[in-house]
Image (tube, rainbow, N blue to C red):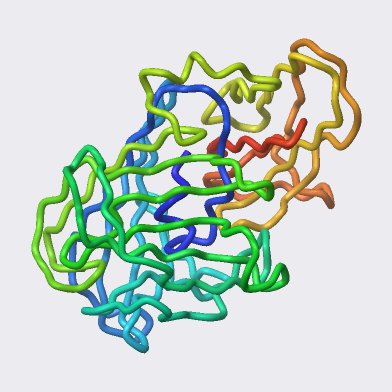
Length: 308
């Protein structure tokens, strides 16, 4: 699923899943202080583990800009650095106040967004109880300042974000990310000291992993087989009832690669071939891609890796 951290940190992760599944884990480790693209900053290693799939390992580079961390580039394990197409930020201030706001968060799905500190609240997550968590809501600028937030992050000084909830357009919970443990030090709201380690648990629909199977699904994104693949893979989804379906492929920067399905589908199991090519018929480069199913008012996204 890996949505929460990456909304403010990595453009290439899209809104994720309402699919009943076991909780996923996301581990972030500050591995080095560095100079990247002429800026002093940090290298953060990310390991994402999804049940039934090989772990995904990437690094991303962050440097301080105007009191915030700018995520400037990323690289899959063993590959070259890639520069993100848009500017993204994580809160890094040593202090926050209700009403603080940051405009101009680019989002490839929603356009310009604004993050605002809305409240100070008590939050309970697997890592413990945090009584002074600052809730930062991110809204789509085109929808207005009073619109439904796309995400709410609860930030704790010296720890980072401890809870993140993502919402759909109707305000229903799409996913929840909770801090399981943090090892490290620092005073900022996302401390980037060398050696700091965060472990998160992600579940769909704001529910716990133990109760995922109690949620009835109108549609499910089963998976892509084979994964990794070369040169083609079958994407499988199931429809409990008929409905309009859109199945699209995005690259790791959140850009649309191709649309595989955009039509009405009947109930039952469906298999769709992706031949690794974009909308113009050109072969995509090796890397991690996102395949996203939208139907019946829900969206589900998973990852597939093209190898050469």
